[in-house]
View (cartoon, rainbow, N blue to C red):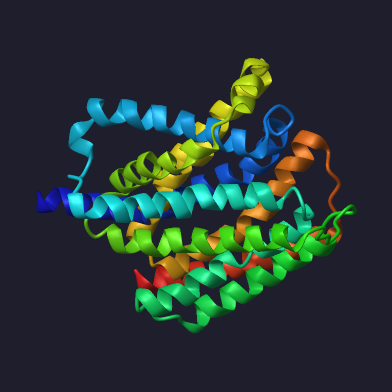
Length: 306
């Protein structure tokens, strides 16, 4: 049993960059696909349908792979509900609501505070030591994201129509960071797969009050493109992305993996260029280079630590 655990640990560390890379790629792809999905569904209904796909997949996995799941303790049911409700539901609702009233550039800048929140919260609640390389990596990558968000695209502009929109995205960023920190603590009792599944299943119950007649009307009118988009968002950025994020969190500290989130806007704009022919500038390339440099600095810290 010990030998199997050691082999699993060695495998995870050896393929860490693949494990952390897949969620980042899928989450970057989520932004252009959300843009497609919002053509047929409202922000709330898109969130409901996306998480419906996730819950169906997880409800199929539970009885078919019972040995892969850690035993759920009664005392943890409410904390796991809070983990899923705030870290997943409130995050997505806050982001979707906020993007109706602020520009994409403003939203990107606010969401870029997630790694900073993670580093601060990890220091307070997880007692993680923030090294100079981690701090430098966060600063370099943040600078890159600022450049990308403000001047990285020809049509980039900062606009906040209603302060409530900016506040909603900020709340989303804070609870998104909390999802990582709280999850890190609970991973001592649950596997990455188990915690992700339980958090989504319990947390999604919080969406029940948001179900309205508009959901059924919009779903009835969905095209094949709409259904394909919802299924993609449910399977790849959500099921695979969130499970692998907690796997990465089992391997490295929250502070270390948080910096990789800065690569999302870089890839998102690249994917938007491929899918929608969105224009990019040399300043975007410069900002992207800063993000990569920040990730490189942190990865050197990670390699040294292992």
